[in-house]
Image (cartoon, rainbow, N blue to C red; front, side, top):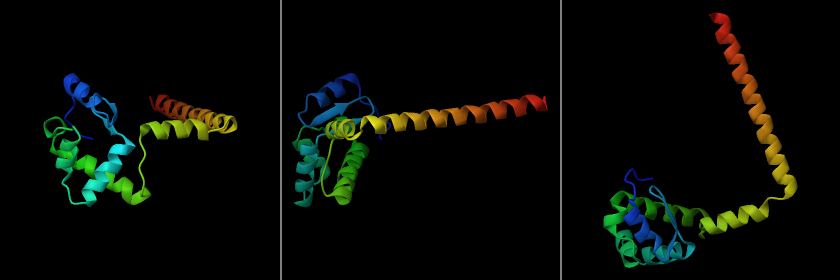
Length: 132
């Protein structure tokens, strides 16, 4: 993640791009379609900066570090999965994949964990008060 944040004007420009899925002041999520296009052009020998400029992502807005990060993440995702996904497909898949029983099991685990954590904090607190 880049330390340089997008201002509201830059966010609006990025939101208007058809390949942008989501944008916040710190985060830019690109569509699956764009990642496929990017990888095809990159393998054909194009430079990441030129690919991003060609599809409406200005170097002035993104900055050199973020361009490098986008290229790195797309290449890494391709090497690991040989396919791409975006936030939309991950969110939809997660909602469908979790059954009611799985959801209850997950919530019980969270409650157990938080209970255990609270007991631990109580012990620490009692030890500290005994030392005083």
